[in-house]
Image (cartoon, rainbow, N blue to C red):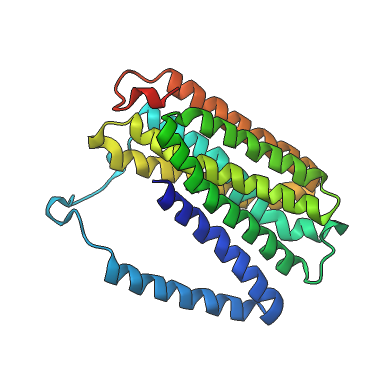
Amino acid sequence: MSVVRGATSLGFPAGMALGGVISELYGPVTAFESMAVLSVIACLISYREIPETHADSRSESVGLRDIYLGLPAIAAGGANFGLLFTYSGIVFATLVSYLDTTTAASVAVGPQGTSGVLIGVSVLTGSVFAVIGGRLSDVLARRLPFVVGCLGVTSIGVIVLSVANSFPLLVTAVVLLGVGQGGAGGPLLSLLGDLTPNSDMGRATGTYNTFGDLGASTGLLISLPVANAIGFDSLYRFAAVVPIIAAAVVIFGVANIEETAPVSDARA
């Protein structure tokens, strides 16, 4: 599961990183054209390689009644909301503008290229720790400590970003953010699987992903207006609290889930 989460977390921010570098060097039109070509290639590969596994049991319709609102999905989804709100919605959405206001990013390329480099470092770190965190949580059967610990690392990363006054500190901040986001994603989804009946897992995963998308979208909508109103440092200090709230949500949810989990020892 963590391999899948690692690849998923790699795609969106990696596009932002690559797009930033291409836009800085060749202009935004070339960046959009490059991303369009990559999208077509991805569609062709998906059509060719991904088999249909549920052709005989397809549902004729899907509606709001199909949304799964069990406590595991709400708890894990709420944590995913906070994680992506902070990581993708706040930090990545504002990084280019933030680099325009600080001398810490005094490297050869401009703000777009620098943000691309920083996001690329964060994404690579996140992908590595997605696999490491998932593997360790499987071996030790202790998902919750990994999730809570990585959410704490995410919070520390945002705090470091808010006080960064040099390029090495900027790199440290995005590495911490990558460790937190990547390390939490796989065990969090695996925890959802441990605590959800198999018959509800598809809908529960949909709820989980919906919460994450809402978190990222909400962050994207509010981050720049709020930063313009209160400043980037204040915005990042506020954002650092969100992963802590997310950790509290998942701890509360797991503590109150009834004994329906297939793997009960993964809770602790």
